[in-house]
Amino acid sequence: MAGTLFTKTHEWVKLNGDIATVGLSDYAQGELGDIVFVEMPEVDEEVDAEDSIGSIESVKTVSDYYAPLTGQITELNETLEDTPELLNEEPMTDGWIFKMKISDKDEIEDLMDEKDYKDYLRELQEEGE
Image (cartoon, rainbow, N blue to C red; front, side, top):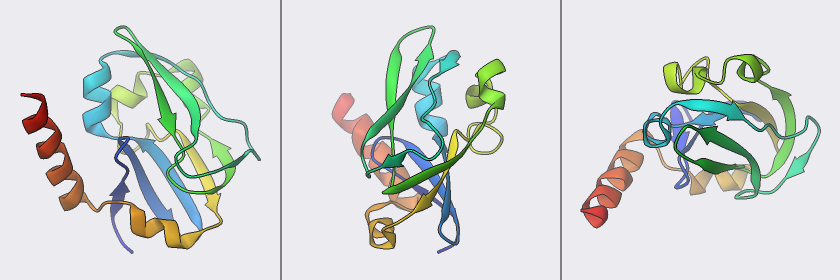
């Protein structure tokens, strides 16, 4: 399964075998505005898909982010501790938040590809207007 996948809560996922790199979508960072702090999960923490595992603080609000899949947190992007603005500047690359070893590959089916995510965003905007 190539490419980037997305959740309805606006996290992105890039898979490399059973390791998922997770970040905040470009849409989400744009909605939050200037990000000033990222609360990280713990390495080795076991999480279930859709669990709230941290929060992102911007000048406008504080918002939770969620585990896209069930598994174990394996690595954190410690650069975000000193430069949380990377989530605004490079949300889909250097602004990744954490990596996890996934334990239920069937959950991947619940994620959206880029086309479906764009359709989902369009639906959200239509509902909001």
